[in-house]
Length: 84
Image (cartoon, rainbow, N blue to C red; front, side):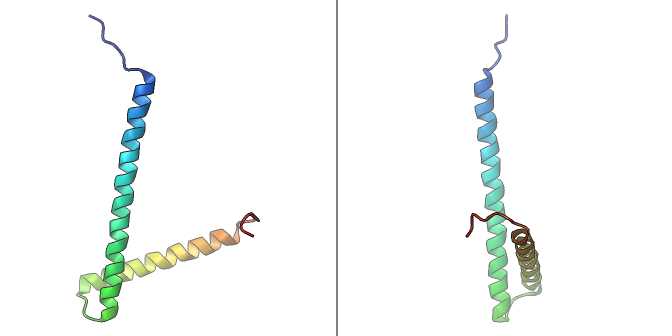
């Protein structure tokens, strides 16, 4: 009895589908973490947040500063004139 191999196109399609599903899952988790951080920043700004929420807010604020600085330094090195 011979075992048939799956067609390469089918395997490629299954791999792409699985990769897309994982990418959506990862982006969803990142989005939920970002939204949670924003809620904690708002809660802390109101003044009645517990200690763990203040820690999350501080972490969110530091991550935001790091990303903004990285974006500024990256855009400063960009010699592309397409944005003009």
